[in-house]
Image (cartoon, rainbow, N blue to C red; front, side):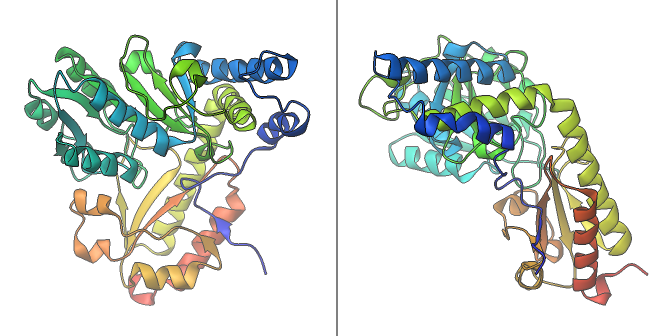
Length: 372
């Protein structure tokens, strides 16, 4: 049986061959603990610092501003809780949006139980945060604005530079969850005015279980994990050296091949959309029509529920069904919400795969949905 077409890159990507090759020596040959002062520790410590420079180059920041983590969930928790507890004497108010990843919203809900207050800013029909509403929500107790760089469900890119400038004007820290955008589109933390940024390796061809947190020099943030003094005292626990090497390598590759890979993803996304529109016709594109990631395509179909579609397509096209809260936030009509699918392509997606997926979907959807 032919393997399903993989159109779920936003959930996780395969580890690239170059990344796997870079990691391999650090499982057996260079196995030392980087905290040790002997040669075995020196070797792994040196590899980690090289990776730190590679990550920093992708984000245009200083290597010492990078803290390695287990992934974006830890990074988001560290960023939001870290600012909250470090700046509680100044204030206890946080601003975020209604379409953030659960690792942000659940963290905010936890902080609300600790006495913090959180404003959840609405988005428009395209998923763009209301900047004016953010400004109106600011009080003298506001200590953090946390808005994702690009949405994981509909791909809409937020006006982070504008929001950061607003936060800076009021002396408020700016955090962004960039799990879906890092490595796919250019991201310069300096030009965007970002204070803290979260990222995850497995979203762009590094292994699972590794991520990073950018913390601008001078920003005070409480530790999430306590123990020994790893990561210059900012994140306790023996570092995942093979994962860190993999993250560094994938950042280097992303920086070198950004234009090429973005072009491939944009072409495959466009081919998928045009194919579905031509073969099925009665579909709705969700997300911003222009300001969107090159890899995510969110489409609503009529004539079938999401569960029905998934059960018929799961052996042929790999997707993750999700009746998303994001659809509620953009006020998607119920008739479209019943069957909304996020497709996501990657740098390895081939034209033949996209064409096969279009053919499969057009044969599965009931005739009533087909264009006349």
